[in-house]
Length: 154
Image 1 (tube, rainbow, N blue to C red):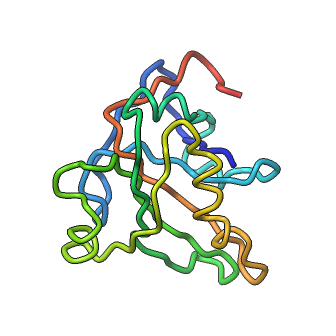
Image 2 (cartoon, helix red, strand yellow):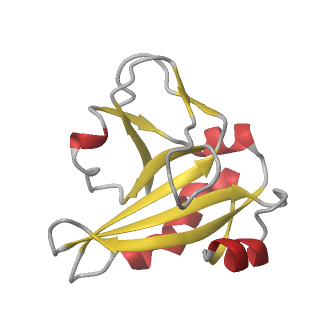
């Protein structure tokens, strides 16, 4: 499992943004893809930047909660998009009950930053493995900024 942020920005630091009507915090958005699969269209940007476990550890070295925010059919009928949110555990206002009751999010489970990729794969694999759809899993990670390095990440 890889977490990839697509962008047209070529600077070293990517800032979070608040442009999503369903996720009410600044997020670094990425796509969860299986190791042998490519990301979505280049409409999100030409540059691929990995979000690695060390990035999550740097933000919060501990447990995180993963929530399913919504799902929607794409413009073409065979594509389905899932929107998720990844929040450090014990973040005030983002507990399981509050996210379910006030935001309508579904709690999927918890992951530890140091083994995030394997844990995320276990929790979202069922969405990616649907043989009837081409599924896309996009995750908004509660992070202030993300170090992208210089040029292409990979």
